[in-house]
Length: 447
Image (cartoon, rainbow, N blue to C red; front, side, top):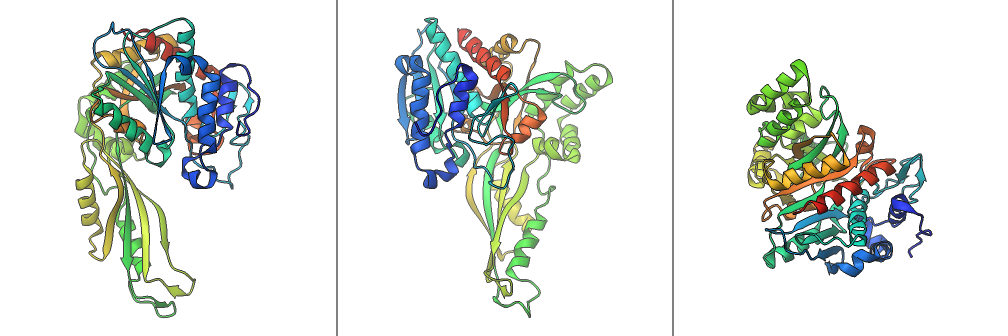
């Protein structure tokens, strides 16, 4: 099956086999559908009870939607557990300790692309469902497993699944997708561990900045070439392009963290949680991740123009990726870009955009259920709300589902989080086992 080695026992061996399938959605044209179809075949082989008891629908070829009928004893809509099985490409110039698609099991870890993003979070869902089916368990409400195969390339599969469910009048009671994790020291001055649960998600926008100019020989350049004009526009879109915006999620995060932080630092967190405008300004001044929590970020990612070293190009362009803060809109974001660039000869074109999500509540039964399941899988670790800065497939549900949370129940160190989309991605086998316990507890407590 697509070069997958013989099965090895345990959750680590099963994840190893998943990693060996290079389901790189950005390279779908080169690799073809074989790895993706192989993945569907693999999970059917590894999780026979899931495939016997649940009804599977495929949407846009890459979207897998499993339906597990409940016994109807719980009121309200279903639970939707989400994950994606595609991964990002590997830069061939990067040196990995273990080959990225070998699924090496060593040192108590499973190594390879997708171990954390997002085949690790996906497999713990399947493990929990398979184990509960073996016990004869029937959930008190319907459960859907929504697995997308192109999340890393915008997520059309999940978008279609969400559209289909909404068209059928299905309004989820709870949606759980990838996002935060169980981390150490969630803020530099906050001790202990916390389960960071994304209650909101920043919007995403990609724009191209294009300028034209007189081409010609590079020996006599004009004062402002197309390249210079685009470079100037990019330079004007610095970190302070967008003002910091307070959000309720950040206040709730600080208040929750204050409960586990002793002394003066805990009192400071409570004060910051009650003063959102001041908090937004402080976080913005800190830069890095704190700043990204409270403002729209601007990241130039690609540039092009020119055909030769001694020829002035008649056109130059740059691609800019933005993550839009909660409370902002894509329309206001584009207007702000144009005002900041202040050059009518630079064209700003939106390539793709999605609005930031609304914030899900933390004083409701779905969030309490997440905290309850955590008490089983990660005793003593508090559930802490925060703002998700990256994009997830769940953004296609948050327009009609009132309780959408972004949380992968895996322990992740700073180094492991840095390996996502990077080098030497890996997950601890013990973390996978705890993740399975989380989802099993979540399903058992649905009533």
